Image 1 (tube, rainbow over the protein chains, first blue to last red):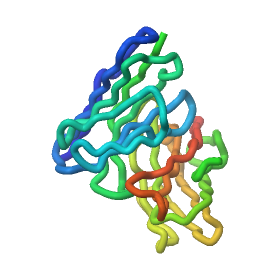
Image 2: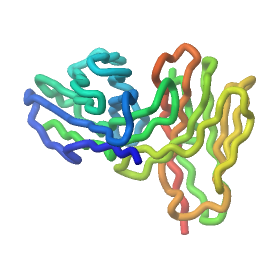
Image 3: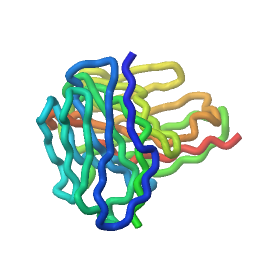
Image 4: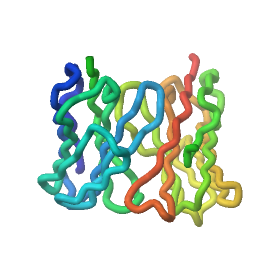
Length: 112
Length: 112
């Protein structure tokens, strides 16, 4: 069966520090991968998605970047965190275009 | 404005009652999906309904889709305390590439 992992679960970082969040999927090949951010009590904002290794589509210009170095690994990064980067970050995968998405447990990031 | 907007934003009912949530969207879709999110967790897929379908059932869940009105409803029958969660609709747009667009969600509270 397929599983999706995200780590860390919680992260507290100072303003101006770098960020690296990792997401890995097991049990499937060539998945579509997605990074979302969710503000408290709000909906999901799509940040990046990838349909293959090295292929990244950015949805919102911002302080973040994404990379897909391996088929089932998706990384969200920042060189210098801002206060506004705080939020709940969710990774998801799907088998194809607009099909069901399967979400990881999320990473709660607090930038102080 | 949002592609998918849920209504109401919050709903509180007694255990055993039925809960109905609505989702409206603005542009043509390939499919519409409903997800549930328990507090602080990732989203869980509930139902996917395609644009050529009008109704789908899964256990105590019933989803309808009216493409002429660009709206969908999610009905949860015989609600339980464990149904307390946020519910999101997500649309796969015809012009939407490899992604879904999520609404802001309905916060459902089931009172014992």
